[in-house]
Length: 188
Image 1 (tube, rainbow, N blue to C red):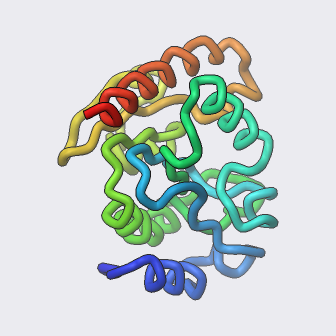
Image 2 (image 1 turned 30 degrees about the vertical axis):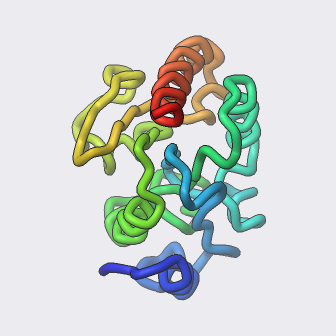
């Protein structure tokens, strides 16, 4: 399923009824940020606030992500944010295999349209569908992986930091690596 432009992608997402998540959503949550950004963040799926507002990463985890990006000097025009699934799984559960597979063509089209050079997988679910189904986030987080012309890095999901503050230093170190690569790309 190839979408030629943003209008077609948005229309298809907003009218999607291909899985049961469409039955319980308030809003389809497609994107936030610059559609021409060199840096793309991919999370798991919308939470309650995202479902209400129709934008990814606007709840507590999103506010933490925004603080982290601001502290590192990563500007809003430099990044684009989306999720594996575009509708909120009930109770903020992890998306099922069927739900993720149904939404992945939308994500592939977003990557094609944005054409980022860096993709950061926020958490285990994003890492599973973008990098390696069998990998463990705790083992490969913070490592660069080059694939099909993209620099990929899995990191902990910001929500994990809200549950376990011991991950903050690791997350900071990983994001410093992202900032360094972003600076290198922007200078060339």
